[in-house]
Image (tube, rainbow, N blue to C red; front, side, top):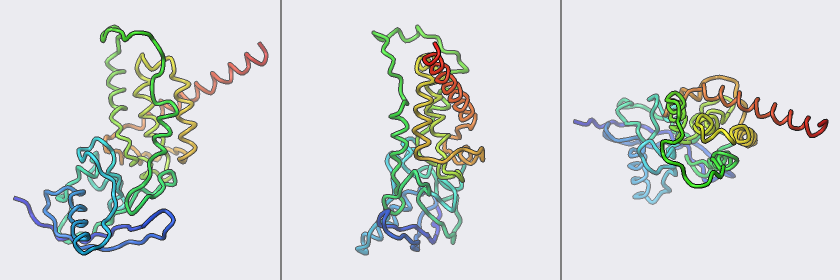
Length: 259
């Protein structure tokens, strides 16, 4: 049997990136078995009935897969429950009478669009720089012709769990995008099919990442905030591959100059 919670919301409202934003307060009564996004839906229904502008926030699948539900809740990316996206956070994590502060991601690489919605196109630019396998190998081989060690397959699948929500950036004191970039790199770099372009892919994606985001200084907040609990070990793998890529480029440059 569900219980009704009476809550006070402190929500960031901002018409656009060029406007000055401010917090607004809303009272809401919601069942404890409702999700956090359903709670925001109830608030918006009330605002619309009062002929007021509803709160803008990103959402899509509401199943913890798409990564759209990008909210800071009481200063934590995706809220107080570890390993959970906002859409899978239920109101039973809160208590009757709580005041809940809801904000957008705060990072220069994610410019605000409106209210709680931000533009995460920087992630798309990183993927476009090299987050794919483009080697032409002729006809598709048989499914089992390329052997993949279980350790490599398991690690690649762990990296591929990244949903690109941006919580790692929002939680990082430097607004670094290293965990996202490392995950998108290593789910390809760890597999045999990703080896031909491994170094070029790493260099291109890391260089593109640095155009939008700050530098990693190993705070580890990204791992703690990630709804898929992706390990910072992937950042170490990315850094190693990036160093190899730069050394390989230096050797090639030396051969062209002196060879």
